[in-house]
Image (cartoon, rainbow over all chains, first blue to last red; front, side, top):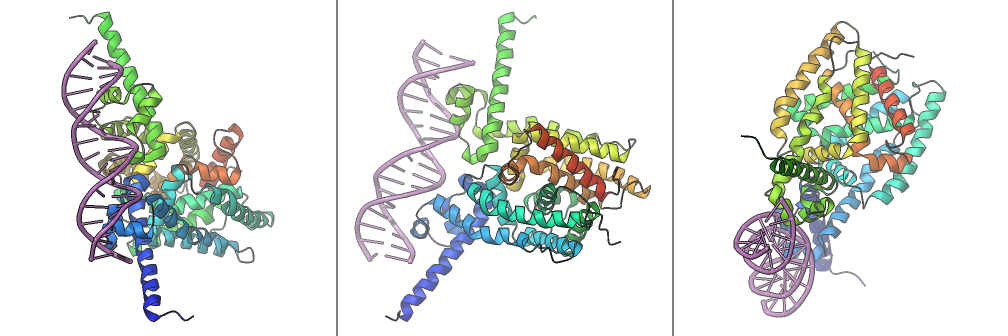
Length: 212
Length: 212
DNA sequence: GTCTATATCGGGATAGAC
DNA sequence: GTCTATCCCGATATAGAC
């Protein structure tokens, strides 16, 4: 019943290869889109043949979906951290920093979701209308509670969340534009810190929480 | 030297047809992306044959570029309206409303630019680094002036402009997500007005300009 | 699991008649 | 200007040897 070492090895390698393909797929799909990307390009980046890639993922669409699914949990996770027991200012500052860190460290993921949603999210729709919607609703209750206790200014919680998403993801999705205008990107530590702090100040400002 | 009526007629019709193709191209490209869109689909929507479309635009890329170029001026225009002689609160409220109106009435244009920029803006880059950058720089001077006169709170003007863009364009680019979460879209007058007013309040709030 | 060879197909583009 | 027919290429996917 024990599994021979060479088989375990092969499995582990297989998993590693699958992961490598998913990584390469993320890079290529987020740059060229589903249709603009070619299996060949992705295979090249992994250093395997097109045919070999199709051994691991039977079709291009299948690979594409797999790439998206692997990211979903990680992507939705940070919002869960918005805790009603914590101080509003600190909780929001932490959330903004987390989102900005994502924009810096996983810009391809952000762009892939962006492309997918802009183009209709044929694939992501159920996820948006289910888990995401529920999560946002839960967090809106927290925000409303804070508003009721007059701990933050009374802005519509849904529009507030949209604003935070828009502002933070903008630095990943529109980084080319940001770079064209400012000459900088989040990859530069100074600019990153500046963008984080500015975004935090703007959001806290709109909520009447300036810590100045 | 006079141009016969039938030739004028043909020219006008030709222009009308070109325009119809550009319109259809915008719709299809903004939904499927450059590579996902097919000339056939666009031709169908106009009610002409693929071959006939290629008579007006020699290649698919050519059509794509033409679609983008036609939109550029309209797209960059609103920012020009931010006038230093006017009242900061009123000027910003007007700008936000204009941008939100664009998001409602020209969501495809917003999405096409979004797709293009997310994917690297191979084509738009010069436009971003030239005219757009200059325009933003000019407006930042206005904002800095307002800050110097202590008429608005001291936020970095570049990040401020990015925020306004992000927040307003979000309603066009991510409308599917907005709809999945709130059940509404800018097409509904109530939701539109609500989104506009909320966005205005949030921005004015962060600038210390609440008119409450 | 990985390769070479090949089947297959959608779609961009051209030729030429009308 | 518009059509039909066709060429042609890139890219997905499959077959089968190793």
